[in-house]
Image (cartoon, rainbow, N blue to C red):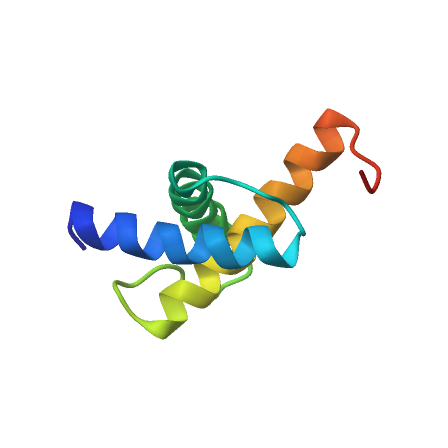
Length: 84
């Protein structure tokens, strides 16, 4: 997948993940959260024996969203946010 594909997939995954976690982020942060989420989701799924990000498709978007939610949850826990 090319750079543009990563940016688009990351933006979508970050936007959806931020919405699920009730976080307000800008466009650039959504892309960054989504790309990090893709990596985190890929690691999680490969650890449990599944398939991670495989390209620009629906499965990769699901993996990236799950990874983004996990990543945002870790960031919230480290910052000490409790429902703010």
